[in-house]
Length: 165
Image 1 (cartoon, one colour):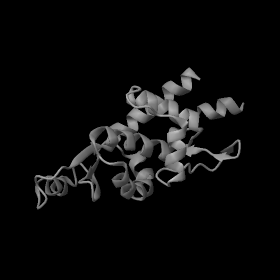
Image 2 (cartoon, helix red, strand yellow):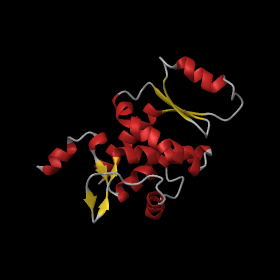
Image 3 (cartoon, rainbow, N blue to C red):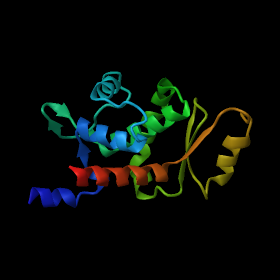
Image 4 (cartoon, rainbow, N blue to C red):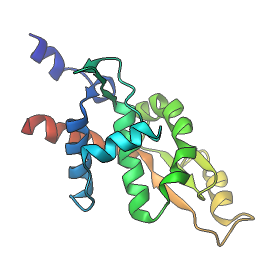
């Protein structure tokens, strides 16, 4: 019965072990980066992305869905060349807004110039997005991500990992 209930839990409500997170991240990155448990532990010890799940396994907190999305975003940003330490600034911002993002992710854009982080709706905030891209800091690197695409990709990979287990 518990297994049946587990299958009906939406991804945002699930919690994950470090090994499950590792499998999701490896699948998302196509094994392009070595993602070991030691790296996840390092990120947790340095308060980059700590497991925030409510339940524990073997005395360790599990990762929440938000943690998995944050780690997925971190590895995508690393691949684009954003230093990990700059990522720290955006964690609280995104974590606070993740429930809203999850309910309507398709039209949300995440933009960063490496110093500031902006979460904008691609239609209603398009003038703000244009300002970020062409305003006074024009010519500076700006990363723009469709967070909805990331969330959909994470959900797809979570399902694949769940079926493989």
